[in-house]
Amino acid sequence: MTLTDILPVEQWEALEREIVERFGLNASVMDDAAARVTTYDNFCNRLCERIKTDPKGRSAICSVAGTFFASEIRQTGEPLLAECDAGFTKIAVPIIVQGKVLGNVGGCGVIVDDGEVDDFMVARSLGVDEEELVGYLAGIPKMTMAQAEEALAWLEQRVEELLKQSH
Image (cartoon, rainbow, N blue to C red):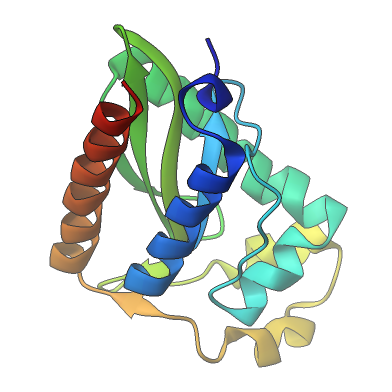
């Protein structure tokens, strides 16, 4: 069973759009192998757009975080709130059907509390000088830990609602 057996791609994309609108995150629905279910592109800041549109950045930062989150969620069946290697906070909630984790839904691209972007790591991943990234660092959204936890709780409830509607 796959996520598109539960809901059509359009409904997963609608959920991503809802996450973007409500929380300002780079939203995504990922299958169990950490692959995106939709083709909806959304960027909550210019640096994430720079990272995600560069194959080096995507593979060194986003893919690594996606794989880690998918693995952790598969093992625990629990939501996860942590930072990626670039320093952005990522929130993910498992999508569990009949006791099996089919994937996760969440978002990233914000800095929580006193966190900060690891511009050295990002520059190395992209193969550019840190100075090249200065213009991308402005306007990165911030969130408190309480807001991140609120987003996580909302996502858990929303996923539960969607799964109930699908049966």
